Image 1 (spheres, rainbow, N blue to C red):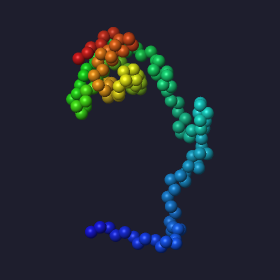
Image 2: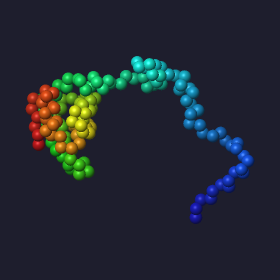
Image 3: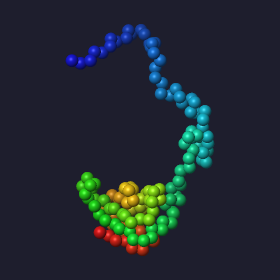
Image 4: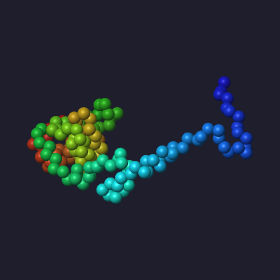
Length: 142
């Protein structure tokens, strides 16, 4: 059996017994707590942390250095071909910024998985040329 529905309200009543849930009720308090950012745009005080400038991360001198391994994989990626870059000396946020730079430079998707960069497609040759131009001493393609 199905659930019983409550009887419909009479047509002339528009008032409700309980107050209705207004998701914008707390907005007036948040609007009072705003601070201007560097661009003069009003933002909530909790969101005034500085964002990295995309122009500075793309023009940054990435000293890759050392031996870098590029390999093509398909297993574990849903049948899609990916290129895995390992052996980087960069860690954490620097590695994430470098993955973004690689993705933009090669025109593919790039993400960080552990201490490796995973790029969509077979990007071994273009990535090797880009890494050698950025200062890698040895690039191994497998």
